[in-house]
Image (spheres, rainbow, N blue to C red):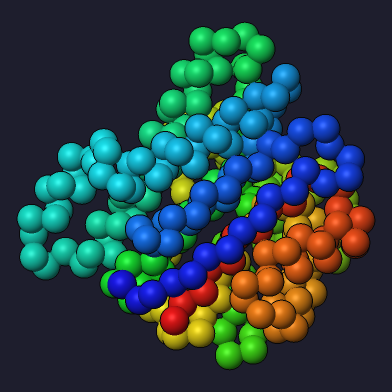
Length: 254
C-alpha cells in the first residue's frame, strides 16, 4: 500500500445544537469513513456512529461475508472485485444494525445515515457511498467529483429538468431516496481507481457541499497544504453561511 496521511475535522456549525456527523480515519489500515446521520432525539448521532464503527469493523475482518471468502480462493478474481463486495456487505451490515436498533427503541424509529467510504490498498482507491455525502479527487490541479448524490434533486439534474445551479436553491435538495439504516438493504455505488503520488482525496458531509460548489472546493484545496485542508475547507464553509454540521476528511497519497 502506498503511504497515506489523513486529516479530519467535524464541526457542529453555528445553528445546530448537536453534531450528527461521524468521522473515522485509520491511515494504517487505509480506511476512511464519513457519515451524516438523521433522526430525532439525537438518533442521527447514534446512526452515524454505528455506521462508521460497523463498516470499519467489517473491513478489518470482523464478520467477513461468505461470498468474499469464496471468491478469494479463485486466482482469476480481481482483488478489486473482492474489495467492492466487502464494501457492499459492510454497508448492508451497518444498515441492518441501525434498523434493528431503531426497531428496538421507539425514540429512534426512522433513524438513518449517509455513508461514504474510501479504502486505499495496494495502489488502488476503492470507494463506496450511500446518500449525499461525497468523495472528491484532486489531482494535478484539477478536482473531480467521484460520487453521485442519492437525492431526488440529483435525479432531476440527471434527467435535464434542473441545472445544478437551480438545484442548489431548492429547499428540498437534500431529500434522499437511499440511506443506511432507514431503508434497510442498500445498493451502494462502488468504484475502484489507481492512485498516484500527490493525489488528495476529500470525503465530506453535505454541510460542506451545500454552500461550496466543486469549483470552490477545488480552489481551497489548491491554495492550502494538505495538513491544513480539513480546517481550511471547514472554515470556508462556515464563512459561506453553512448551517448544517460540517465534516471533512482529507487523505493524501505519497
